[in-house]
Image (cartoon, rainbow, N blue to C red; front, side, top):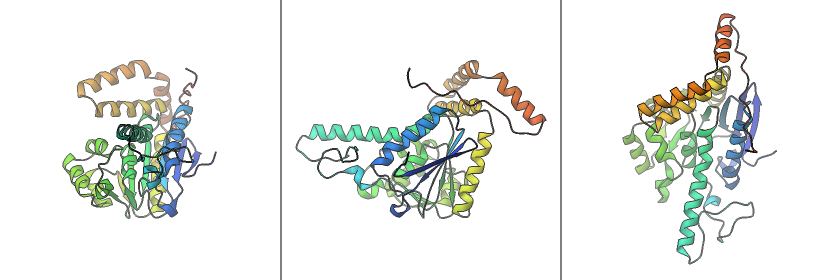
Length: 288
């Protein structure tokens, strides 16, 4: 199946999802918001992919939400089936409810990256602004090249960011820094983001960036997928709960999910100096 905004490939258990609208700086048009959760949820449900890399073609990773998401100009659903964020008419309560419902729908687009059973790694070059930061903040890891910069740009158009940046970034870097970036909308360089711990590594150029991130993903894919999924679930749960709750969660998780066969294979692979051979995760059922 072809997508307007994405190209997807899978090699050796690693999925590579590329944004393919470089001429528009990979702005997030209505189909982006519909297709991203479909792609990621399907990969997660199938169970065969063990790491997902998101990259982008062109000079810039993502210029944020496209203006077509905000309005189709007449208050009706647009021809591609999307729902405009701003509508015309005199029924204020209806307009406000539609705005709220659409914002929640957009938020859920990036929730798919957190609920995915595999880690999500982003390879970022050039601009990553507005909705771009919303997206990468929901990923497990972020990598950049030297051209990368970030901006919480909503403040520059008189709007409060509402698709996840303000909720997720303070969990990743100091809150005072997020407040400065959100209040000013200023550019945040790759070096600054690295110093703050927002990104894992800075590569010299885009080619080495994508190659390096795919190598990290391949290393993850070589591990037990159950152990990796459990690690992601435990860390996401602990981020949003107390230490005590997190400890109880992982005790319950391992009591239910710990697989001695995976552990035996891990030890055997180390002894024999080879990659581990682990079964894929079982597909999730659509029928129940």
